[in-house]
Length: 509
Image: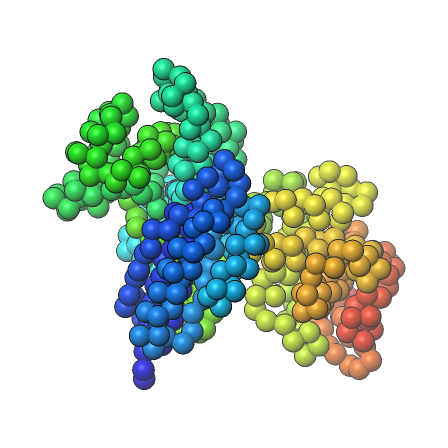
């Protein structure tokens, strides 16, 4: 069978990359990088440089030609979260589409963290063994840091911080020539940005940890010559301290001569070194690993799974992150877990009605876990508070569109009917509106079955008998309240699916 080659391109703040890969084996047959900087002043001016669009067009046109030479017919272009946050990102997206025919799909910051984690899990041979102990993945790019925490062999936590070396260098550029102790001021700034962030990390960070640092160039280049000579893959705290002492007050010329740092990258070395130092202290790093996988490698894995060539499953990270968010807002766990259980059962048994896929099932699962976060603000109209909390919160592994979908589902899990509140649907396509409506209708039924928060119903069974959907509830107690609430919330289900849900109680011996 001929190799299935796929092309994945990614536009970052400082470069554009192409990977041509055999999705069956994940073997890369070509990897090309073009150093085109679209975001020369993106963190200071909040815009993408229009003058660089022509360079980006030439690079992408060249990538297309390379893919044609390999016979690649299927390819996709992604853009980094940092670029998508620029004020003129939509204009740049359209200009590149007009000139190249390529449409950029923007990644969210949580997606980038998730994709890097997936790439490490697949490509780093010692990863499974390493995460039995406290382990942190630090994905550092130009404008942000993604931190993922593992312990006891499982994923535990993920969060992003809008602090990267290019962002730091741009924001504080004016200070370099105006203060005598620039490094000290820089360090104070980074420390102030990280201090509050540290409160959200697990308490176990006081224990010595393994740290895998990803994407830390040009910092990682400082170690390359030492690694190539000694064949060392891991670094100790002593290794880092030695480098830190040598570099922190060094001149630009010294860095270029001794470490062969590119002239364009010199200004990033000190901000990056200070940032890494703060992060290593924050995570109490004992052993440091420098990895070279990026979000692009995660996109390759994602595509292989999507097309059925690989069976990796990292959805547990998404579900765990959702539970962490629910815990942060003190969502009652017994109600949350029972509603999630009922939602999943309803979804699986109602496939002949909704015709939705595995990803939609995952979105319903996440929405079921977090739908009550708004009660932390005010139980009255808590669904409205859930909506804006979820729109403003990072949800690991989900696209921005998926995050908006979950927020909208949470908004409509209560009594309000989406069709009567059309303003929240104006920005959605017909397909998105249908998905939201179907999943909201299912979540409403599941939530109604435990409206009294007493977990009266231990399990349910579902049967479709036109014109009804019969939900048999196994319960010790009466279900008067549940029946009353169910009759109200089921109206929207009837509107969406054309069938009437009814409850039948069966006692449990």
